[in-house]
Length: 179
Image (cartoon, rainbow, N blue to C red; front, top):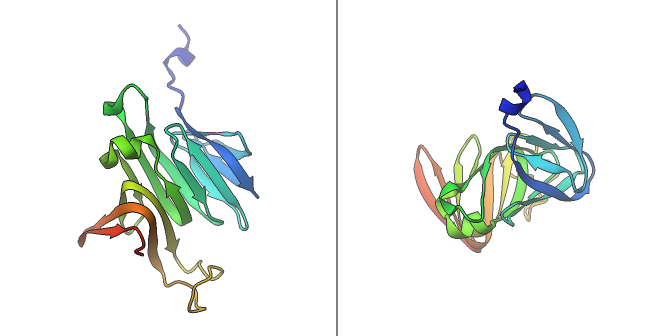
């Protein structure tokens, strides 16, 4: 047997469906790759959008995530098999930037198995369409109604469904129409 027979290739989590600008993936094996439309996104990838870049990922379970410019998102774990709901597990970590997400089948059948982590809170979903923006002195170009950039911290909004946000201080539910 060859050594390659023992290597477990990273599972395909999804595919890039729309891209404007530059999107790079740092693979779990340490290699880096520029992605384009129809590129596969793998479990373990850390995705990074450049300035002016938006990217949409369609995941295997039908969920979608749109990354804003200047975003870093890691696919920590992605496990989905249509016939095995018990194996569902999706964990995405956002280190900087922002995203909009619509949950797929895993979020509909196993809500507790989908979460988004940031340094300040973990976002759990409830059959959801939501947005998250993590500001760390880098949201100067983000428009607000008051004309000032958003304050540093994690900003979320919910279009459909609900999310929970949890950290050491506790858990709060944010419903559709709230931010």
